[in-house]
Length: 215
Length: 245
Ligand SMILES: Nc1ncnc2c1ncn2[C@@H]1O[C@H](COP(=O)(O)OP(=O)(O)O)[C@@H](O)[C@H]1O
Ligand SMILES: [Mg+2]
Image (cartoon, rainbow over all chains, first blue to last red; front, side):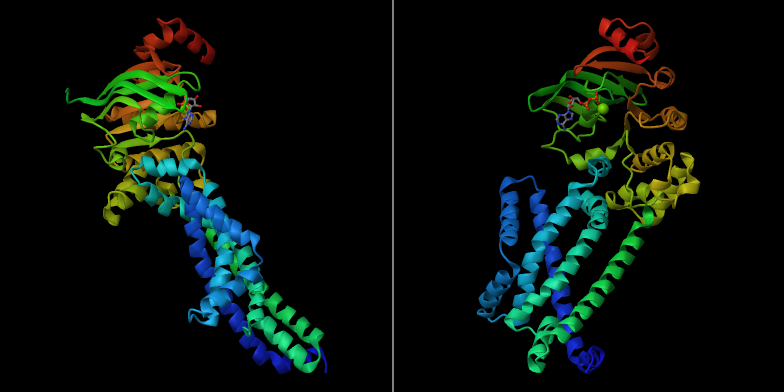
């Protein structure tokens, strides 16, 4: 049986796995964006204690393997009757939030200080200027690294297979062990990931193009 | 207090850490007067302007705007800033907004005014600065002179009592300086009270009621621009003028 036939035979299950991969990624990234924004604001708050809190969070995430975080969240949260899905999503979000916080912080700080001054000189408050002037420009700058982080998150979601989530990678290894044919299904799942990544790269590219119309 | 006094500064002091930037500044600007500030780089010109619209907060002294003594304890400084327009050397236009949106932003989001009405006024202002055909263009497509004229229109949209200009033409190519200066001159002729940091001596002589020479954070000499530029009383003023002219 060639690879293509194996692909055709298994695609319904793989698509199911892809859907879960997709949901894990999207939901965790959306939550991570809020976490990231929150910690980015702590980092630029100029209030020492808040900056330390943000630094500590980023330190913890950087210093722990994602798979360890996922297990901690999984065992910690399911013990509190939180669903497997949500527990894993929160683990992924906790991890990605730190990287996204750094992306936002960098983007906000890269906006020329004159923009804040101009807004303030027109009578806008700091927070209004942040919302109307700084953040729209910063999010445009954050978009390429965010897209990149999204793709990393998509691939990292494969770690959810370790706690039994039946996402893409788990589908592949399960088939592999059932059929005593790991290699075929690993190659197939690699193609699924590549197509997903390509799909998202194109979307990010399109958004970027649309947003840069003013340059 | 004299009703026509728009800006009154008394014994204004400002430091950044150990650096004492403004030292006992006294200054009175009456309604419709145009004042030029000159002085070497680092002498405190920008800091003085920024204290007048409270982008910097003074350490001590008095600043009154339109007869009202402004203190951060008693005033909402955002409101005061809305009354004092500022034009920057590097324009600081909002690059993600069109020219028209740049002008409409503050009246809509600070004054919470009706969009249609604001748009009408914004269009009129852009016409006034000669940029009606650029309404829907993004700032990146404009020349420096056009950008600065948009910045002036943007500040005017808030109907300020006072306009501050911080070296409005020094980032411009020489051939674009004239269009900005003539817009400013028009504004002065309409009776706008203006404080202008500039080394455009021609403009100062023609438009300014008086000029101030700032050195090391102190006002060294005040006079009518023609006198101050051609016949400075102080040796330091003379040296400075020799170095820039
Ligand atoms: N925010 C600031 N923090 C520290 N020092 C500053 C700040 N702004 C200005 N200064 C210093 O104050 C002095 C006066 O600056 P400025 O008012 O910009 O002078 P000018 O506009 O006449 O060139 C300079 O020595 C400058 O380095
Ligand atoms: Mg300056």
